[in-house]
Image (tube, rainbow, N blue to C red; front, side, top):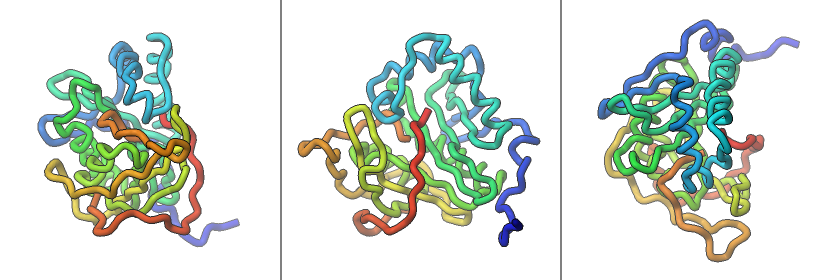
Length: 245
């Protein structure tokens, strides 16, 4: 049965190109992961904040190496793109395009930053660089960024990276401590590009859905053209996504 719309991005645009090296502000360099990065990845996933917001850990260097090895195949399948975020030659974090749908021109942005590199604009700079490539070079139409409302640090990253806050997905993702509401941010091709700088005040984080006291946010990781009013639930159809790796 023929489609009534043409693909936003033709199939093969990722598969037929090598994964690029991207340049970000402040000397950040986003490059494909290498086998020798396994010790850094292993240590990253021992961090409680990265475990909390990325829903996994590693028990061995071999598991970290397998995590690295998967990304080449995901790129060739045009499903995901994952970069090591580096500065001065050292790995500082990770940035990824997950759930790429070339037909629809949509992908989700995720990231984490090592504890020693937090507070330096690494997540914002990496997200800006990755979004620029995805929207202008790859040709996607829309990028989404989701994070738990209990993680206001990721709300600030999204705002600084030009991702507008669109609403709240109630009880949308299970974390190690229970179900969390998720903020949905998005940036469209043609939206103004943002970058590191003061972020607007985000809506007050809602509490974890199974804990009346809630939890404080963390600068560890994620899973905006700033909104002028608090987030509210919208009547969209949302397809659940699996755990972020």
